[in-house]
Structures are given as structure tokens and as C-alpha cells.
Image (cartoon, rainbow, N blue to C red; front, top):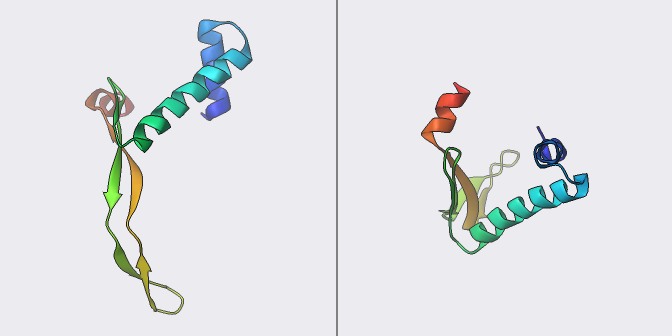
Length: 90
């Protein structure tokens, strides 16, 4: 399922126009991203927790040349699935 299919599913559930359904999906994604940018986490009961993880700086190797390369510290998104979600997928 992609973003367009998700918007179509929302449209079928709530009715209205497809544009409104796309705005709902876009709004949800924007809300999650905005919250993560602030450093907070998003917890959705039954689905899981979206959070931001700090990845430390490290030294890596270029596979072609074998030369050492410094990789700077960065923030990456993280998702932890809820137990109910894991059980439903099994």
C-alpha cells in the first residue's frame, strides 16, 4: 500500500472528496514529521512509537579504496512496533 492507496482507503471510509482524503493523509504525515523534528515522539496505541535516535559520529571505510571516511553524527527516525501490531502481523 502506498500513500495514494491509503488516501483512497480514507476516502472510502469517510466519504467526501478524494482531495479531502489526501489532505487528511498529508496532514497526518506532516504532524508526525513535525513532532519528530521537535525531538518529541509520536505514540499510536496498537501501532507503535515513532521517535528520533541520535547516531554518533564514526569512522567508516570506503569499500572501493579502503580509505577511512569520517561519518558525522546525525539524527535518524526510529519506529518501534506495538505488541498488538506484531501479533497481528504474525
